[in-house]
Image 1 (cartoon, rainbow, N blue to C red):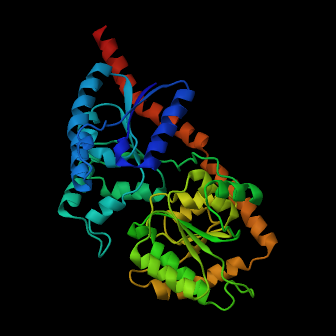
Image 2: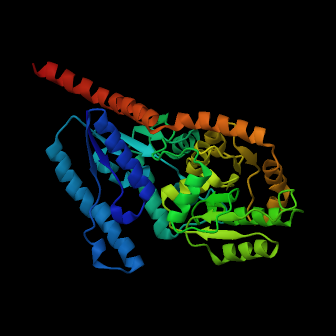
Image 3: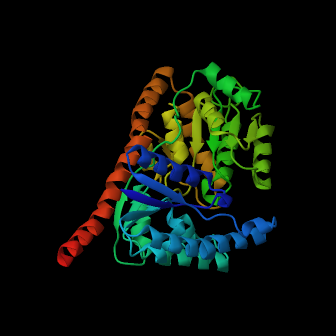
Length: 405
């Protein structure tokens, strides 16, 4: 099988998508297939360091220069290759591909749903709405899709503007060996990353500053926890909270300061390597992940693969990825962070007071569930989907050859 994967440009800065594409390329090559990864080179984007101008120059590189180059190269490739879009947000390239055997991977439709007005109070600019409309128009030409969760599959079928496509759900495979670590190993790894003052048993959150990651909700929940008598029910100071992600906003810093006035401690940790994040998971008492929207929810399964409890939102796809083992809170409504936190902090306090035997059983169950999310398992399913997508084209070519004979 010959595969041509199309991925995001390096200047796009989507490291998770880059790792995803690399995982497929390497996995298919290990299975004996010929796999190439094509990404837009930085041509015009190198001409300016101004963020606004770089964005538009990057669009020219992605959607004008690269398609011209790809069209020329696809003609040279001839028939018989399967073209794979590693992310449906590259759907504007589908005018090049829809007549060829193809598969499109879908991760989340939050941007398209925002453009469609599904989230009250959340709006895109006029150019952003146009951009998302062009993506949807492109994937409307697609017929074969892989979705990372049932939720993403449902969003695709609801938003797809063309004839009903074929969709398979394949959960993401962990492309890093998350597993339990001995405390001394985790501590050494964090110190090697220049992270000191480590108190095992901390609360951990990981996520970006996008509204749906609900970092302000995490901080409101932590503040409610600090307000509770005795922190976690013991005669001790509240456990610290590690917020792993980008630089916090002013509102986040204000919430953190409020928690610290109540005896808590919030650490904002930026630029951590995956190995250091792994160590943080391994030392944590719980992952706080009250996300409002996700396509998959990587931290849920990453934490479970490390054997730690997860407190997340009772909403798809977190319920799906949590496999009935994650503890579920009600979703937070807009502008209701403090009231929501007060209603749900009891779940956190109860979890932190569990006896060790109950925590050990949850850890064992979580580790067993996480084994379903192996990279090898996902790659096996991708391979079967790719072969099936190529099969109709192979049958057509054989029939045409027979007619010619």
